[in-house]
Length: 158
Image 1 (cartoon, rainbow, N blue to C red):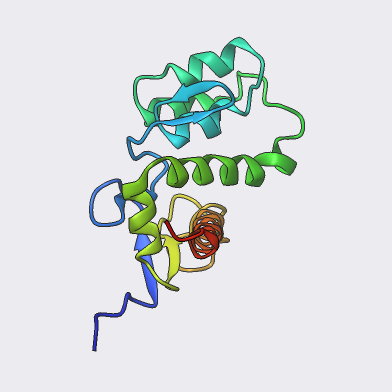
Image 2: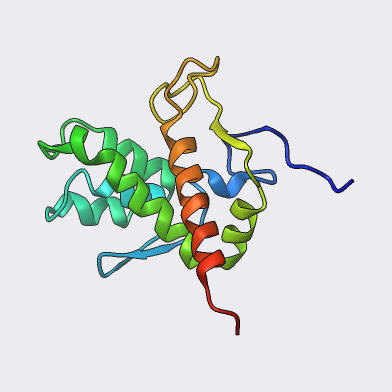
């Protein structure tokens, strides 16, 4: 019997087999006419669209720096952030896995496993460390996986 992927795949850091699921993984994306060093850069910068802060975050040297800048409330957070943040994350993750064939293969290779960002540091995007969190990043990844799988199945044979 072939190896079955685990029922749940936990990820958090950029290392390991599923490190590419982290928004800190160094896989640039092209969105909205710009190149972003990581999906984290894009996500954090979209808190300040059309301002000098957007570009400053895009130019951050490391994803952790982009995250810190995005969380800095001295910067003017867009008023509608809470209502658009899930869509922004979906846009970033969708671009990342569509634009990198190797990452798409890793994501599709997870089968129907539940994808869980396992961290006590985040109970919205992650699982809160104990499973009580919303795991929104895991849900976004699973949605993108479903979209990519459907697109592969609907592609005409070459």
